[in-house]
Length: 151
Image 1 (cartoon, helix red, strand yellow):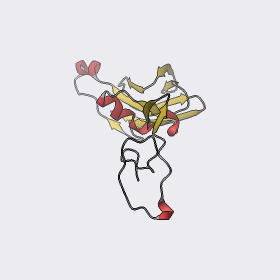
Image 2: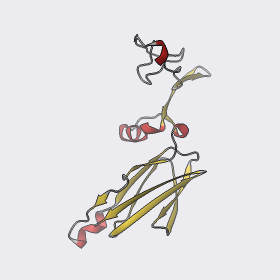
Image 3: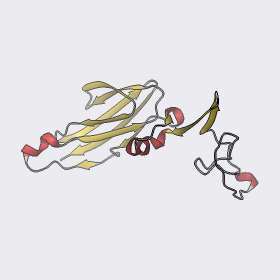
Image 4: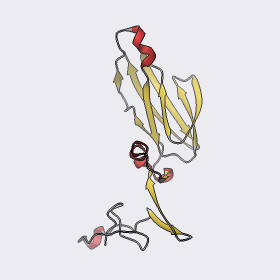
């Protein structure tokens, strides 16, 4: 029996299951997404589900420690183009999203200068001055960095 949500071996806490034939050498670990505590059933999603939960406006728990601190957007080496009209730049921003990490707050360093603190979810924007840019996020004992360019 497999949990259809996690793809892991269904546990007693999984509400649903499907039957799948799995080779003995590939039997998955027991599902740890579903838990029952004090008669209350909960689902805890891995950190990679942050964007989906935010966009779906779902009330759910995320296991942020399930993945190391990772900057999801922008991607390494991205190039962004500003609007040719300077009057439009006030409406432009670089969207940043990070997942994982071992704390609920993080420090953001933009171009080795600007530092500010963010709280979960790690979703924020950066200004769009032209040039090669670096954004570094430090969360507890972990850090992630992305380099991109704004033209």
